[in-house]
Length: 155
Image 1 (cartoon, helix red, strand yellow):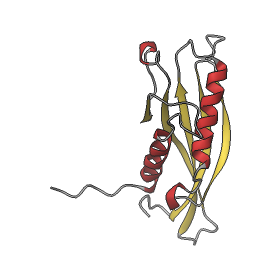
Image 2: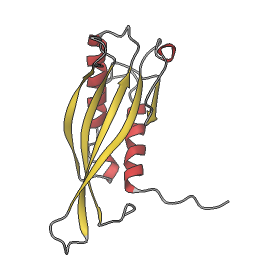
Image 3: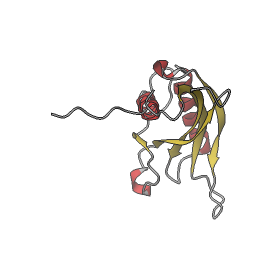
């Protein structure tokens, strides 16, 4: 059996976030339980959301930073968004609780098992499509700062 290819640091972080969001289980300190947690899910049918909500972990953009042009190390600022997909019947009070659970999950280890130097909070709130006045879901953004070698996604 061939050896699987190594994972990038970014993939390891996404895997850790998905695992952490899967830990939201309705037991203390959480109040809710998602039906599923996936990586980069972008759409669900209404009938897939009638019994609860689903989370999608999306790694957005990475902003590398170096101290000088001679520096071989860089700090990476990876923006992550956890999207909350709900049915149209979901109350905003329930969405606020879900946002709270996602924030609690992030707070449990902001270093992501040693993969990151730290995490920073970003925006969170409701998703309101322009074509309607209703709430379509929610999103929680945060930034993970981690180190790597310049132009090296694996170390």
